[in-house]
Every structure is written in C-alpha cells, then in structure tokens.
Image (cartoon, rainbow, N blue to C red):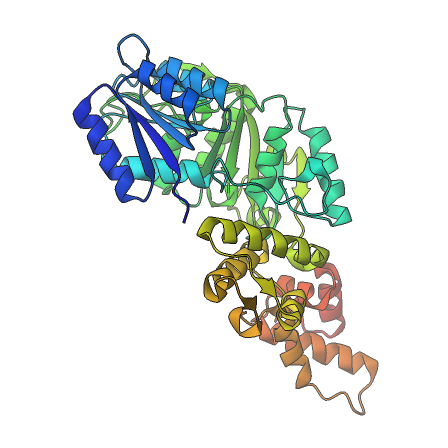
Length: 452
C-alpha cells in the first residue's frame, strides 16, 4: 500500500515526537518541521497529503503555514492544533481552508481519528487520479454514463448557486454524500468549509452540542468553549447526513436555526448569526416518519426546497462497466497490484445482480476481488455475491404453478408470493415487481387482502 506522506509542524520537540510516532504506527510516512519557517521550506520542495501544524509558534504561526500550504497546493489537507481554542481561531482556520482542527489537551487516539476522518472525507490521497471513462469531463467526480444521472448532475449544477436547502433521498449506498459534495463544489461557497454531521453516528445526547457548540462549564467535562458544526460551516455548506435519525426535540432547534439564521451554544447567553447552506440526506421515507410523528412536517418542507432523488444502481445498470473499470483501477492503485481483468462469466453476474447495497456494495465486491486475484482474472467464484432481490423473486416465482391459471390468478399469486418473501413489506415488494406502491395497494384492495 502506498503510504500517505504527512508533515508534522511543532516547535515543541516532545510533542513533535509523540505526533510522529503515533502517525508512523498508523502506517503514514512522516516528515517533521521544527517551526513554521521550516515547514514552509519543506512544503515548497516536497509533496504532502496532509500537514498537521501547531497554531501558536514563534515568528511563523500555524495560520501562515496553512495559507502557505493552500497557496502551493490547494489539494493538501491541513489540520491545525491549538491550546488556545477560541471559537474565532478555529472558525478562521476552517475558513482559510483547514480540513479540521483539534484542541489541546487531546489523546493520540483523538488525533488518529481526526486524521482518518480527513483522509476518508474524499476517499483519495493527493496523488491518486480519478478515472475518466467515457463520461463528460464535468462529471468526473461522480462516475456515470447514464443519461438520467447526467441530466440530474446538470440540474444540480444549476441549482447549486442558490442558498436554498437541498434534501437528497436515496437508498443506502447510492452515494448521497458524494452528491452533496458535488453541489458544494459547484456552488458560490466552494471556497468555504464543507462540514458534515452524521446524525445516525452521534448519540442523541451529544448531537446538540456537536451541532451548536457549547460554552465552558455548560456541562460536566466542558472545560473550554467549543464551536459547533454550524459555526464551523459559516459561509459554507452543512451536510446533515441521515437527518431522519435526529431526535424530534432537536429538530425544533434545527428548524429555528435554519429559519432565523442564528444559533445558541449550550450554556450561551447570546445568539450567534450564521450563514449556512443546508443539505440533508436520508434513506428513510420522511413522509411516513411524519405520519408516525417521528419527523416534523414543518422541518421537512423547510429542507425539501430542492428535492433530489438518487436512483438505485439497479436502475442505472449501464454504469456497471464504467464503475467496474473505475474501482478496478482505484484499488489496484491503492494496493500496488496489477489491474485484473474480469471474465465474461463474472461480468454477466455483475450485470444481473440486483445490487441491494447499491454502489457501496459494488465497490466492496470489486475491492475484495482485487485482493483475492492479485492481478489475475476475476471469475464468478471470486465475487461472492449475496442473493439479492432479483434472485429472491426468481426463487419465489419458480414455485408458482401457472398451468391452468387465469392471468388474474397468476398476477395475484405472484404478488402474494413476493410479499411473503419480503415479510409483507409492500414498498420492497413493489420495487421487486416493478410497480408503484399505489398500484400494489389497489391490487390488494381488489383481492380484498389489505392487511398483510
């Protein structure tokens, strides 16, 4: 595996050594700079994927290092470290292009986590090239040759210039965050921070402080004030990933922040104005959540100004060849192995799989196959595909006897058998059968079997 080069900048020898040893143990290639001036000299001569710099240093401070890095290479990530964790310092660093910040005191585990998150935020190191394939050059960020997807990207490029909230809906694994970043990159805010909050990954009790920040002494353990994601995203874009997982009481505070353009830190006495463009994503049926009192209707309409629906992979199967080529080259490059070829049998399996896990499942399958064959030929046995919806349907329908049945009876039996296979889930059964949920309900009413 190609090691990512990291430059550690700190005038404290003991801190510099601790940071370096921690990063070396994680598999990174580490270089050191004894102060800001030394860092700028090394940055001008070498290429780094990441620069980690202390903020307060004599003569040349961390902010000057940050600006120097961005002037030389805008693609290089920068993490700033400060013991003087004022909100203004952190926000200024993010606005100048820092990928993240960390405040002293911190554990080495905290540092490793921040570094990992920074690298995973775009999935690639500085030297890794994107595969162009046959798609238009303007769509290189998202791999597709599907006409509907390209039309969607063209639409998003047009609406990205506005400040209007965007609600991106789609099944798990379709790349909703990738689309959110696409909108940000083509917006007037592209030079400002893009901050993401995974509402499903942060416990409900911590999500409020994560989003809105807190003052020193706001709760046990709040030893210093810390800005929330809203403040860090000021002037830029805030992604609320898996918005349906947010506690309904916190939804009310979010709604106020969006409407008023201001937030309240936990323990704070004054409101703080923020200018943030909101993009929310979900794989849940929010209208159903609203009917079940799990999601606020007023928040839904506030977020759904620009609705975006990402199609599942099974509806854009023309992308299989292009995606396969992209992921083969990507993981061959990452692992330093020769790019394998795909046999006709394996390609046939890929084209006929239902892909319930969408692009994420497809990527995982290709990554695993690259590791298994080590530059050889990928055959059917290397894919280890799990049985998907398409195979489930074939298995269900194979047990149905059509001989001597009317078309109405065949249709009825097929619907009932499919519902049985998916435990009565009408939405999933409708997708398998290629009909709308409304049609499914009408058919069940016709069969007088609505309570399945």
